[in-house]
Length: 107
Image 1 (tube, one colour):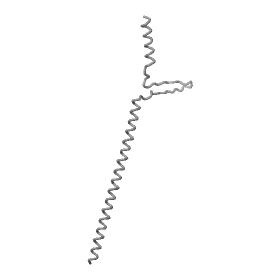
Image 2 (cartoon, helix red, strand yellow; image 1 turned 90 degrees about the horizontal axis):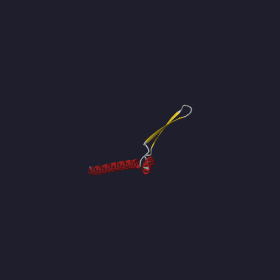
Image 3 (cartoon, rainbow, N blue to C red; image 1 turned 135 degrees about the horizontal axis):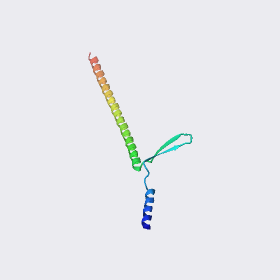
Image 4 (cartoon, rainbow, N blue to C red; image 1 turned 90 degrees about the vertical axis):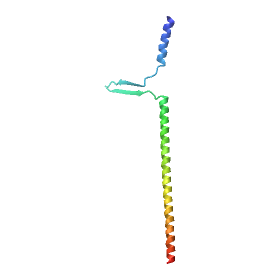
């Protein structure tokens, strides 16, 4: 019977020592000048939550980086298209000038 009682008491103490803390605790203290202060503390985030937050932050950075690259590609393509249009216009102008010169020399 002594061994059974000792085992029961040891189990209770071990259970209390290794029990998980509650997720959030709140304490209320009263100061002597009738001022009450309420303090709410939360338990630190679990490793899984921290890892999830880091992963989400990395994903957000990656999305921003990809969007920036896409924007740069669009701007580059627009600049290239503008350059091509300008080149075509210059070529067409040169051709018309040449045709006008030919027409003037034939007169």
